[in-house]
Amino acid sequence: MKKKISLRVIQRISFYYEALLKLNLTDDSFISSKKLEEITGVSCNQVRQDFFYLGISIGKQKKGYQVKKLFRELRKILSIDRGAEVVVIGAGRLGRALSEYKLFKVRNIHVTALFDIKPGLVDTSVDIKGEEIPIYHTDRLEQYLKEHPEIKIALLSVPEHAAQETLDRLVSYGVKGIVNFAPRILKLPKSTKDVQLVNDCIGASLYKIVYQIYHKK
Amino acid sequence: MKKKISLRVIQRISFYYEALLKLNLTDDSFISSKKLEEITGVSCNQVRQDFFYLGISIGKQKKGYQVKKLFRELRKILSIDRGAEVVVIGAGRLGRALSEYKLFKVRNIHVTALFDIKPGLVDTSVDIKGEEIPIYHTDRLEQYLKEHPEIKIALLSVPEHAAQETLDRLVSYGVKGIVNFAPRILKLPKSTKDVQLVNDCIGASLYKIVYQIYHKK
DNA sequence: TAGATTGTTAATCGATTAACAATC
DNA sequence: TAGATTGTTAATCGATTAACAATC
Image: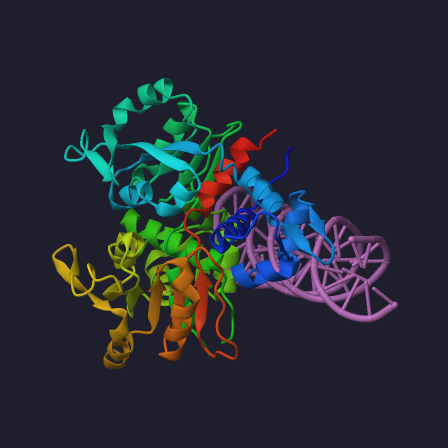
């Protein structure tokens, strides 16, 4: 399956899942796309389009989707049972905030270690609800990834000037997925195969709001 | 001017600005769209399209854009000189992380107060580089906004179940812009006028990466 | 002049919304 | 049956990429 999924779709799927979780419905009950619109804010047309696109065709006319089946499908798409272990490169404020981000927990995504080069941070640890997550020197990253081949994803929260270089290193170490949080659009090294990269711009939505308010009329 | 700006455009404009800042160029030097591509990762075609869309036509053929003029245009679009004061509703981990987010500082965006209902948090404060930002009870929000009419924007980092209700209250108190960080697409109350809302989904990019890696081939 | 780079238009691509036949 | 809701297709909308005449 070579199907490309957009950020938007996966985001909405997450909303469906999280909203459904909170409703505490019985397995046997049904939920319609109209009801999903109410609880997630996504239009029922969009809901059905998303399900169609992802091959979820478990609906019953006049009833909707059986909650039990829908859960199963959504969990499968979101790989929740499988989960993921990731490392965070850059243990500054943002890096540490990511490490304790609650919604990652809900999705079975765990940060196993952080990496940094700052003397005051290296070889300390971050306490996340009783669990100690170590901060290592970035020099140990290659070694660490060799020892933990199950880790395929890295979150990049280093300063902007170091971002592209760090990305290149991560790719050379065999990392398969990278989320870049530096305010720059990074590019994968030429001829990179099978590595996923997303550039994530925290704060852009606030800048948009500021623009709209100050430039309106 | 009723022109709608997309999140994407404003995000790229931010990249141009931030990258330009770091280059430390002399005011008289010129920078081409090709060079901007190199330093921001955005294609030169996209750069010129963005400038065209936003009415920035200060380029000189064969030279590019005068740095001084470009700075002035970008600062104007991003409202950097004017800046903005905002409140954060919900002083949990995410709320506090937002309060100290460095890139907001660069943009002259300041959090003046946080609001929460949790007894342990109310009437304490958050220390951001020596500055004490107070946390008030949400009951005092209406009063606070009346006393600070310059504050037109709120960041919403409350739990999901309280998000829509809090949004409605914010609108009724006269807030003009809201960024929602709860994992749900909020809707403005019917017939709301002149209020901007953006739903921001932190973490979606990681979920996308997980999907791509586990569903590839 | 020749080459480079702009501003702008046109073509392409992708995502959302609307519509509706099928049917429980 | 009549009404509701699905799965799916088509229409619309918006954003990106490509192309190129103008010209410094």
